[in-house]
Image (cartoon, rainbow, N blue to C red; front, side, top):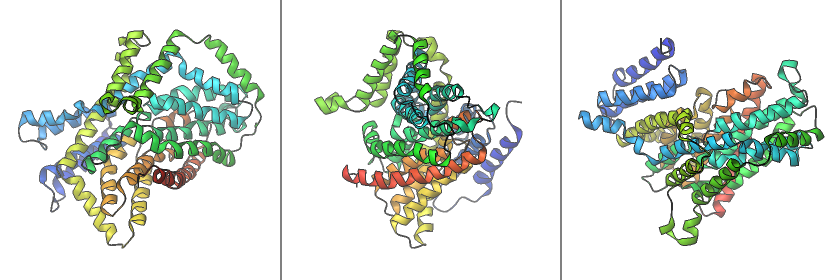
Length: 485
C-alpha cells in the first residue's frame, strides 16, 4: 500500500467535511470554500505523513485541475494548477539547493567548520561559537537548513564530541555532546531567519507578504538580510551562553580540539581547485544578491535573485564543480520545486478567490471585539502563530496554512506593515526551536541521542522566548534606525 491508511482517512474526512458538509459562510464563494477543503486536507495529509510531501503535492495539483475550483474550463484549470511552476521564487530555492551540493561535494563546508574550530577551539564554548559561525557563513547559499545543520555541521560536532569520549551510547553525553548538539541545532533557526535563501520556506513568506499587501511590500534579498542582520548576530552571540547556563558541559577546556581540527584539515589536504571555484561562486552570489551592481551602476544593472541563482549554477556546471548528473541526482531540490509549487499555487488561489481576506477579516473582528491596542493584538496574533507550530511537523505547511491570514489580520488591526512582516518572518523561523519534529534538521540532531526529549523541549521553549525578545527589542530598534517604521 502506497499510503498510510489512518492519516489518509483523517485528511480525506477533513477535506470533505469542510468542503461539502460545513455550510459556505456568507461572503465566501463555493469554489473558494471547496478549495479550502482541498487545502486543509492536503495540509492534514502532510502533517500526518500520509505520503511523501512531493507525492501529496502531485495529487493536490491533479485534484485542483479535475475539480475546476479555480476555472470552469478544463484547459484553464490545469493551467492554474501548474501556474506556480513559473514562479521565480520557487526556482530560486530549487536552484540554490542544487548549488549548495557543491559546498558538500568539494568539502568546502567541512573545511570552514574545522578552520573556525582550529582558531577558537580552546574551550567548549569556543567550539560552540565556531559551529554557529560556520552555520552563518554557509547560510546564504544553503537553502536546505537540514543539509546545513544536519548534513555539514552535525558530523563535525559529533567528531569533536567523540574525540573527548562524549558518546550517548556510553552515557557520557554530558561531557560536551549535549551542549554542542543543542548549540549546533539552535544556530540553525537563527541563521535560517537571516537570509531569504537560508531555508526553503522563506521565499514563500516573501510571496505571501506581497500577496496580502498587493505587492506594496516586496522584500528583496538585500532588504531581508539587512533587516535581520543585527538581531541575528545578537541572537548568535547570546544563544551559546543561554544553552551553556541550561546545560553546562562537564568538560569546559578543550585544548586538544584545536589539534583535532588541524588534523582533520590535513586529511582534507590543500585547498582544492573545486573549493576555490566554489568559494568564487559563493562570492558572486553574495555580490549579486546583495544588490552591489545596482548600488554601483544604478537600476539598469540590477540582476534578479533567481537569475543570480541560475548564474551560480551555470558557473558550477561550466567549471566542473558540479556535473549535470549531480544536478539530476539532487532529489531534495526537485522535490522542493514540486511541493513548493503545489502549496504556493493553492495559497495563491485561496487569496485570489477572497478566502484569505475573509478569514483575516474574521480574525480581525474577533480580536477587535476584545478592545485591544494594535500592539497587543498583533503580539497575540504572532504568538498564536508561532506556538501553533507544536501541531506542525513542517514549517512550509504551517506557513502556508496560517501566515497570510494572521499577517492580514494584523494589518487590519493597525500593525505597521513592514515591521510586522519582518517580525512574522522571524517568527516563521524561530518556531523551529520548539520540538524534535519542528523542521528537517531537528530529527537528525535529536536522533543522535545527545539529549532527552524533555531537555530538547525545555531548551526549545526557553530559546523561543529569548529569540522573540531579541527580535522585538533589537530588531525593533534596528528597523527604526533603518527607517522601516
